[in-house]
Amino acid sequence: MTTHHALTTLTCALTAALATTWPTAPPTQPTATTVRTAATTVRTVAGPERTAATTVRTHVGAVRGTAHDGYRTFEGIPYAAPPVGNLRWAPPHPAAPWPGVRDATRPASACPQPADEVPGGSTDEDCLHLNITTPDATAPARPRPVIVWLHGGGFTTGAGSSYDAHRMATRGDVVVVTVNYRLGALGFLAHSGLPGSGTFGLADQQAALRWVRTEIGAFGGDAHNVTLAGESAGGYSVCAQLTSPAAEGLFDRAIIESAPCTGTPDRPFAPSSVPLPTARATGDELATKVGCASSHDVTACLRQVTVPRLLAAQNTDQQPAYATPLLPTDPGAAIAAGRFHHVPVLIGNNHDEGNGWAAGIIQAGNPVTPDTWPDVVSAFFPSPVQTKAIIREYPVHGTDGGPVLGAVIGDANFACPTAHTAALLATQVPTWRYEFADKHAPPLTPGTPPFPLGAQHASELPYLFDLGGHPRTLTAAQHRLANTMINYWTHFARTTNPNTPSSPPWPQQTPLSLTPNHITPTPTTNSDHHCTLWNTLG
Image (tube, rainbow, N blue to C red; front, side, top):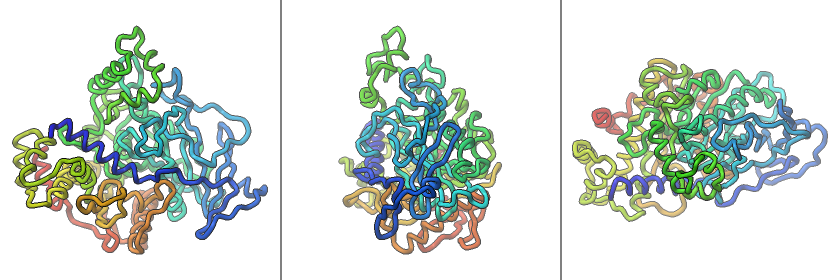
C-alpha cells in the first residue's frame, strides 16, 4: 500500500462514512402554515397573528419562516451576494436588498460539491445562505445566546441545512444559525492572480458572522453573545477563525468538536491548513486539468469553466491556505504562540475517532493482520523510527487489526492533539475538554462493519442535532446523554461555563467522559490513547 493510495483510501472511507449520515432524499419541508406535533401534521389557517410570528424584517428585506411546535425556522436567507461571474473566487459581497417578503420556508442549495454527503450533490454557486432556528417567543424577556454552526465534510462537502437544530434551540433556549460556505476548489483555490487566494470559504464564514452581529437581534438573538461552533472541517474552521485577525470581535466563545487545531504535517489527517505555496501548486494543477494553464488570463479562463468540470478536476482533499492576509499563520503555530482571540473554548474528541476510516480501509481490500501491519503503518508513517515505535506500542494479534488501526488513527490525529490543544488554550483562556465515549452510539452507515465502530468520528452529532431532519433512534439512556450534552453546550454559550445545577460537575480543563450511564471527570485520557508515544514522536 503506497502512502498516496493509503491516504486516498482513508479520504474515501470518511466520505462514505459521512455520506449515509444524511438521508438519500431530503426531508419534506413543512409549509409556513404547518404545525408539527408528535403524532401528526396539522394544517392551520394562516391568520394575521401566525403570519406576524413567522415574518421578520432584516436590514435588506423581510423573510417569512415556518412555525413549528415550540420553535420557528427561517431557511435559505442570503448573507452575501451569489459568488458567480466575476465574484467567483472573490471575497463575499453584501447581499442585495429584496422587495416584499422573501420565502424562507425551505433550504437553499448547498454549495457546489460531488454527490456524497448532500443527496445528488450540487452545482449551484448561488449558495451563500444561512438557516435560523429559534424558540417560539418572538419577544423573549432578554435576547437569547446565539450558536453559529459550521458544518464538517473535509472542506469539500456538507450543508448547513443538514443540521436540524430544534432540540438544541428549544431545550437550551438559544438561537442556532447554520451556515453554507464555499467548498472545494471554489472555496479554497489559490492562485497568484486572485486576492484572497486559498481562504474564500473562511471569508464566507466571517461574512456570515458579520450578518449575525447585524441581524440576529430581529430573531430574538443576542448579537453580543455569539458562540462559533463546528465539527471536523467545521471545527478546523473555528481553529482558523480563532487565529484570523479579520475575525476579531465576530464571536465571543468557541466550540471545537473533533478538530484539534495543533495536528502535525506528518499525520494522515493533518494539517488543517497548508502553506500558500502548496495551495498555489494545487491551484496550478487544477488550471492545467481544465485547460486554463496556458491562457493569457488564467483567472478569466477559470471563471468560464463549468462547475461540474471544476468538481471533476479538483483534488479530493482541500484545506485553507495560511501565509495569507486572512490567515497569516498556521492555526496550530498561532495557538502554540498564544496568538489567538482570547475567548472561552469548549473542545473535545470522540473516543474511537479512527474506527470508521479503519473499517473503510479494510473493506476496500486492505486487511490488517500481524503480517501486513508493518506495511500498513509505514504507509502512513514512512519514518522507520516512527513505524517501529508504533508497531511496538500497538501490537496486532490475530484478527484484531481493525480496532488497532482505528486506535492509531484516532490517537495520532484526534485524541492526543486535542489534549495538547486544550492544554495550550487553557494557559490563556477558560477551557473545557470532553471525550464522547458512547461505544453504542447510533451507526452512521448501513450494513455491518468489519468490527464494532464505537464512538467513531461524527458519532456525537445525533446527540446534538437531527441530521437531515430525521431523528436518530436513541435508547432512554442515550436520550438523557443527549439532553445533558445540549445542556452543557448551550449553558457554555450562555455563561462561558457549561456547568448547570442539574448536570454532573465538569471541572475546567479536566476532561469529561460523556457516556450514557457515566458522565464523569477523568484525570487524564493520555494513557488510554498512548499520548506519551505521540508526544514523543512530535
